[in-house]
Length: 74
Image (cartoon, rainbow, N blue to C red; front, side, top):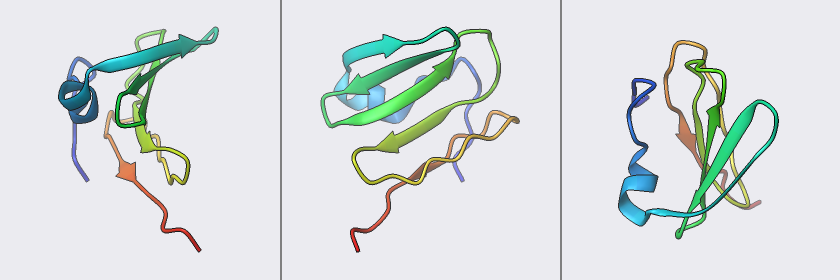
């Protein structure tokens, strides 16, 4: 599993740039031009998720690990 610090910029955002973003009371969601979504906590927590749409297996870990996964179409 790739690891990242809270301040690290996810590779998918570096590669494609931020295409759009949205958020709710607790999280910010960034989308790059390739359709990857990055979920970042607004309160400074270490939880980071990166996944590909529309089929995804995203895992959020409290230690700041970044897990990237994509489910195969069945």
